[in-house]
Each structure stands twice: as C-alpha cells, then as structure tokens.
Length: 150
Length: 409
Image (cartoon, rainbow over all chains, first blue to last red; front, side, top):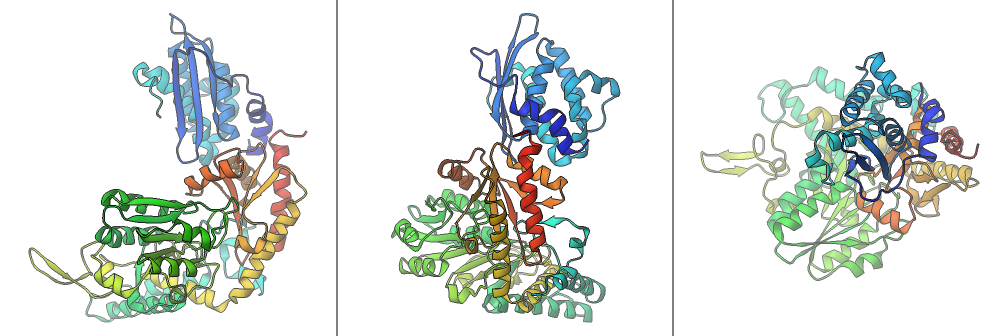
C-alpha cells in the first residue's frame, strides 16, 4: 500500500475523528511518549481494573497523522485486554513494522494491521510506533510508567 | 543562464525528481565528481608529510584548493582553515576563541533565527565561562534590522554570532552593519555562512566579520568539507582546537609548539579530496553569473507564491517580497502536519524538508508569533538548476494535499 492510499483507507479517519482523544480524570497510569527528532508527542492515559484489564484509555498530543491515528487505533484494540495481551500485541506491532511478524500476529492487530506498509517507509516507522512504545513502557514497568519522560 | 545545460552537469537530477531540498544539501556537479576522482586516481597520498612525488602533488592540490576557496570569500590562504562543515567551524571558534577570551559576566549575543549549530556552541561557552547568552528577537517575518542589533548590544557583548541567511525564513542579516556595531563595542562578529554563501556574493573583508563559517555541500561540493575564515590576528592568539598530527612544529615528551597558520587548526590527516571537490564547486559557482542566479531563484519563489496564492489553506512564512526569500519557501498547510506534507510530496517525487530545521527556538517563536499549529514547518528550497516547470508542478501538488488528508471531500 502506498502512503496516499494508506491515509485514505485508514489514517485520515482516525486522525481527523479520533475516538480516544481526550483527557482522563484520575487515570491509573500516564506517560508521555516523544519522538525527539520530529516533535511527535503522545500523552497516554490508562485505567486498569483489579484483574489488570485495561478498562479505559485516552491519548492527547500533537504530531503527524500516522502517529496520531496509530495511537487511536491502538486504543481501539487494547481497551478490554489484559496487560499481558497488550504487551503481546505491542510486540506483534513492532514485529510488523520490521517485517518479522507472522500472519497470525498481524491478523491479531485488527485495524492496526493496515499500517503494515509502514515497514516499507523507514522514515515513518517511528511515527507509527510512538503510541505502542509508550504503552509498552507503561505496562511493562509500573514504576517507570508514572514518570513523565520518554 | 542555460538551465538545460546546467542540469546536464548534475546527473542525479535526470531521474525526474523535483529536488527542492537544496538548503539541506546541494546536488553535486560532474566537475566536482571528476576533480575528486582525478585526485584519488592520480595524486592520492598523505599531504604535507611524504617526501615523494605523489605526496608533494597531493599537498600542491590541497593548497591550491585552499587558494581557490580563500579567493572566493576574499581572504588570505593563511586565514582559511579547512574543517568538516560549518558546525565544526563554529565549534572551533567557541572552543578555541570563546573559551580563551571570555570572562564571567561577559555576554554572547545571537539571534532567535540561528541554526542549532550557531546556538549550541555558544550555550556551551557561556556555561563554561559564566557568561550570559542573549538573543535578538526577529520580526515575525524573519527580518532582523540594524536597529534591533544595536538595541540588543551591551558594553558587555564580546561575541556577536549571526547567520548570513536564515535557513527557515530565507532572510538576510545586515552583517556589515553588525560588524561595525560590535567592533565599536570592542567585540567580534562570527558569521554563519552555511546558508548564505551559495546565494550571496560574499567577501569576508568587505563584510568585516572576524570569523565566517561555511560548508562545501551547500555549494555543489561534497559533504565532510567546509571552511572557517578567521582574522589572522585572532587566529594567531588562539590555542589549537584539536591536537595531534600535522599541526605541530616541534614536540617533546611534555610539550609542543604548533605549526603556522592555518595548519595549527588542521590536526590529523586532512580531507584532501574533499578540499579539491569544494574548490571545483567554487570554480563552478564562479562561472555562473551570481546576479542572474539570484534573479532565477527569486523568479521561482515568486512563481510558487503566485501559484499558491489562491489557496487559503497554504500559509507561507517569511517576508512578502520573494526577493528576500533567497530561494526558501517555508510553509504549512492548515490541518496537515508538515511530515505528512513531505510524505505525500515524496510520493509525487518532490523532495522537501519538514520538521524543525535544526532551529527549535525559532519554531517555538513562530508558533507564538505566526500562529503555527505545529512546532514545525515544511520547506521547499530551490537552486539555480530548478525550473519554472518544477515550481508549477510543486504548487499544483501542494493544493491537492488537503484532499489526500481527508479534508473537503
């Protein structure tokens, strides 16, 4: 898929009409992810229940359409999933953009799988992975996740 | 100016890409490539050391390159130091001149327009010496006037460091007047010519600056070679920046005396083929009519401005007058991040730069003063080999971007 097609098929919708953009009252976990070289910036907020299931998720920030849309699609996918499942999906997404993920792993990413072609656009990989990297850090290590730095 | 003939000198352009990122790096002409290949094929040896024919010839070619480049900017050969790029040149001045002359309470004055390479070395020097780093605020269109410089100077200003041309706004700084003003206060002017040298006919003695930094690759030359002009009296007094081979006169176990200028500042084996390439780029520029070249670039910017003027979503930064842009067209498209703009244009085979342009304080300023949506812009920068047809193709592509991004369907 080429870039314009990817914008049309999936990115524009999530960039212009995000379902999960906003600020949350009393989130359990917050983390700001930044791509220092391009200024993309994602502020991710999550709520987890006692069984470690993500019950709510919102993002805020500023950046290119791919970074914002990818974060929105990610939240679509991870809300309702356990910490373990989210981390597994994050691993699959990272694998997909490096062309190392299996077809099953890519399928599990649902709509986010539409970003597969990013693997052929090296300049944009870090845009697509910003949200995923941030959630990986948040859920991989609670101690670090409350700090605000990437 | 015969653009078709000029384009034949730049083989990379033949693939149909509209190359509008000349302010980041200029393309290289065959004359440069041939000169570098000729050096490597016939004269390659370590200059200034060998006692055999090749080394003597390598030395001759390296020094002849120095003479060509020095003449181009109007200084003596002994005042031109070969460095890697303008960034290294500015660091040399900061580490060697600033650290050895500044005292606590002194001031370094720069502008908000500066590229990070003319900002970070001064942050370092100010911190190390307890000096203050002060800024000249430009006008929102990127213009810095003589009055603004005068108002920002103080009796404590020891170093004034300014870019010759802004790499974002394209605006020229009044360096000649700046030199007079700072000299009257007993300080020195450091000029960053990385962006300026390819566009403005430059004579460092006529400007009156004390240092002038530039890069070979912003001319049609290679990367990894640049120059620093320094006024001889200052260079004589300055300590070396880097120490090692080829910059010494005599060395004992505990001490050393240094080679004469400019070799005192050229430690280690030099980039001789790079210097030869930069000299070939200078020779190429000398054959072009600089006035005509400037007019051509202005014509292209003017054309892009005219072709995009009817689109209310395209916001252009910098002065109203295209002649003050010096080939730079910095812009944003409403609702579209500049990285997406550059991504779509890339698919149309148009190469532009997008981001903060190594000028983050300026982006912060523009976000406030010019109402920018993102802390970034897109930038098209033209050169003498670009055509009116390319300018029109670019303008047409810009107007389609919002459509691709899901607006107005």
